[in-house]
Each structure stands twice: as C-alpha cells, then as structure tokens.
Amino acid sequence: MADFYVRTARTMQDVLTHRGSVKAMSAGHGDKKDAKRIMALVVNTLSYRAALQHILKQVDLVKKEPKWFGSASPLNRTQGALPQPAPSMSDCVMLVMLHDLLFTSRGIQAAKAWPPRERMEKYKSQLHAELVRLQIRQGKKSVEELRSGAAERRVAARIPRWCRINTLQVTEQDALQQLQAAGFTRTESNTLEHVNAFCPSLHVAHVWAFHPRSTSKLMSLPLYKTGGLILQDLASCFPAAVLAPPDRDYAQIHALDATSAPGNKTSHLSALMQGQGTLVALERAPQRFKTLTQMLDKAGALATQHGNVYPQNTDFLTLDPQDESYAAIRYMLLDPSCSGSGIVNRLDYLTSHDDEQDNLEQVVPDAESSSVAEQTRLASLASLQQRMIRHAMTFPHLERFTYSTCSIHPEENEHVVMQVLASEEAQQGAWTLAPRAEVLPTWPERGQPEACGGDESVAQCLVRCTPGGTSECSASAVHRMASNGFFVCCFVRRTASRPAKRARHH
Image (cartoon, rainbow, N blue to C red; front, side):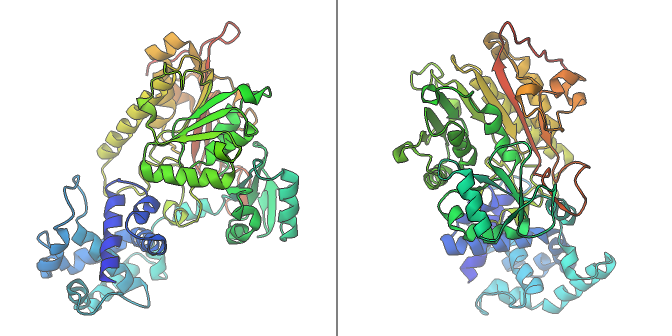
C-alpha cells in the first residue's frame, strides 16, 4: 500500500503540473482496478486541498520531519525536473496520506513500519486539532463542508445526465422502447423532478436529458453496453449538429475530425452521415488514440465494422493540405486543447465512467496560480488554437468547419475568432462565419458583443453555453437547457451570396 500512495501522489503531481487530466494520469500509474482507486483518492484529496495545505502549514511537518517531508526526502529522488512553482513528490505524498488520516475511517492504508506513515501519525492529535480549529474558524457545521467547489456542485446539480441515441446502432424508436421498458418515463417538461424522467433536447435531434441520479441505471442497460446509448453532454453534441453535411449523397462526402479522442463528436458526425462517405479521425497521443479506437469500435463507427471512420494516430498540424489523402476533405470538426474552464464540478465529474470532454489541456487548476500565470496560459492556448484554425483554412476543398472549446474565456473563444478572421489564411481562402440561421438558430445564448469588438452581427454567429444554464434555469431543478460551459462557431467559404464578417481589431 505504500506504493499505492506513491503512485497516487505522482498522479496528483502530474495533474497539478498540467501533464494531463486526472483520468489519463491515473490510467498511467496503475491497472484498471488500481486506476479507479488512484483517481478517487486524487479527486478527494484535491477537493480538500486548501484545508489540507492549511493544516500541514500549521503543524509544519516539513520542519519537524525534514528527512521524509523536506526537499531532500528520498521521495523526491525520482521526480525529475518540475516546472516552477510545482509541488514536490513529498508534498503530494503528505497530502494524500493526510486525506486518509483525517477524512476516512480506515486511516492511512500502508504498513505501519513505512517511515512516511510512521512520521505523520506521530502528529495525529495535532493534525486533528488543527482540522477542528479550521472547521470552527470557518463556521462549518461539518468537516465535509471544508470541501472546495460547493458553488460548482450546485451549478452541476442543474445539469441533466445527457445521452445521445447512437443511430449507427439503434433507431430512436427502438431506443425509446427499451428505455420505457426499463422504467423510464418521457416528459415534455423543462425540468426533471423524478429520477426516472427524461425529455428530449429542444435543439439537437436524438439527444435526451435524464436525471443525474439515473446515471448508474442507464449504464447498466444493454442499450448502453452495446453502444446504442452514448453519455455525451448536450453542448458537446453542438459541433457535429452544426457541421452536419446537407441531406444529399453522403457516400460522396469526405470529412475529418482534427482532434478526435475520445471519439463522441466523431461518432456523432458519423451517425449524421449515416455511416457513409469517409470520416478521418485524428489523434496524436498514443494512449488517447487507443481510447478513440475503443470508443469508435463500441459505437459501430469504424470502417472495419461497415462504418465510415478511419482513425489515424497523427498530429493534425503535421498534415499537408495538398496531400491527395486529405485534399478532398470538405467538412471538418476542430476542437483543440483548451482550458476546460466551462466544465463545472470537474473533480467529481471525472469519476464518472464516460469521457465526454474531448481535449482538456488542464483539468485541475492550481489554486495558488497568479492571474499573470493564468493569462500566460490562456495566451499560449489561444496561440495554438489560432494556429490550428489557420491550418484548417489552407485545405483546398474544405467548405465548412466548426471550431469549439469547453471554455468560457473570451481569450479562447471570441478573441480567437476575431484574430483568425483577420488572418492572411482567412483572406486568401475567402473564409467567413456561417450566419446564425446555420448555427443552432433557436439556441438563445450567443457570443459576447464586447469580446467581438462591439460587433453584434459577429456575436450572433457564435454560440455560447453558460455552465449550468442561464437565468431561465431554475436554481435547484435539473433543467433541459442546462449543460457544461461551451463555445462553438462555424467557418464557411465566402461566396457571392455570402458576405464577409469583418473582424475589428481590438
């Protein structure tokens, strides 16, 4: 068990240094069973991180036990170079052990002779006393209230368990019959008061809202296990719905998903193409590519299963648009790495069994990071996002492509759009924004005019989702207009009948 704490600490260190998501990093430090335990401990430790750090600072274990918790600790010998500021391995080991010592009935699950456990338990009474002092000082009724993210959890409680009927595997009528046979009841109400109630999205076909507490039941159904039901947030369904090629000979359509893993947007677009034509799905990271192929296999989307998806372990930015393998691409999904700032209640969210958020550059922000560091990070992401959009604009036969993020920051959304509209690639390729009539016209929340240089016409072409829904959503009820935070727009080639959306410098 000592090894378990070390691997958990290393996972948390990887997450806090932005090397990947909790789920991805947990998978890298254990087998399937261990990965779930590691992820659960990392999630819970991070949710109490502020309280745990305060307690450790007050007791000052680093000063009292420098051999194991100081900078020269043997725990730090294999950690390698870390970006600064970054928590050391000994810091992370202290946090995960202290979580179990203070917040679980079983205590630290490691051999009693393991030095880090032995050293920490010497101060057990002092650590508990500091926990009680902190609880009293903050006016909390219980220690559980010291858990961070209470506001996010209230917002997340309004978001349904969104599911998409995978029409590659089952018809919607058959899916509804199976759901009703399992005890679910369809309603047309905007709110879901009962656990077994479900209602359709008003904006995307084949997407249904269920009560969050029905997730386990949904995942036990054969419909889910065979790929007929896919857990996917409403907003995550927007890009494929916006991009969907017009109703014509799909067999002649060539499309590409530039950043595909885990594959929900890819299989959605495949379903909208009725499994016909060609859909190339790219993913550059080997582990995520493995996940992509597994998800597409379950969805019945792979060309080897009579579907139309051809996955490739390739970096989109390395593609040559003139290569005959890609020159015929006419439609494209582009969902680059982003801050993930639109994902509410992120830590709890990642313990679910689905993986619907595609490209989170960072899942758990460093609570101690400065606003300057945050702006630097956003600028770096925006630079990458602009680079990928400009690259997409150079594909010679591309007709339209969507750009989306699960971010709420204008720096990654409206600002990126305004910058690329003014780019050389946009001018030479005659690119503009598709009008509101072609981009979820009934969705009420649009782009922020002030972030578009005051241009209301540009803002109307953009779609935004506020985490947990806007003011129309009840503060306490599960509402079918609620989703995670999201942004999407669609770039199209300019024609004589389609004037340009001009970017204003700001």
